[in-house]
Image (tube, rainbow, N blue to C red; front, side):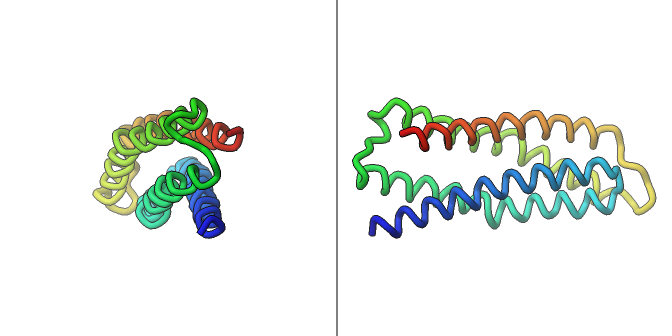
Length: 152
């Protein structure tokens, strides 16, 4: 059981971090094109991978981490570094839910509502800057969480 939990935890962390990094570069690259079709595809892809990879990976990290820690002698809620790591991980999810997902939905709607050949409104790129800012915050919180778990 211990080996299975370790494998699940490492697998989930790999999926989670991989999705964040790839989608960040994917979305930023697409936005440099300023092409409606490319941005529509990129926004749909980001939303899809969030639903298929990011959300389930986050749940698997939380479940496997909480089951694994006591089996290897760690108490999450009484070990300061692990408590901060868990808080940072949860906070990244809150940032994602409150800022990134609604921003992505607005951007997707702007792309979808625009007929081919028309330029995206300035609002799209204001939302893109908002997404970048909060995306970096969420990513840094995840990196802090990973660092603290690794050091524990």
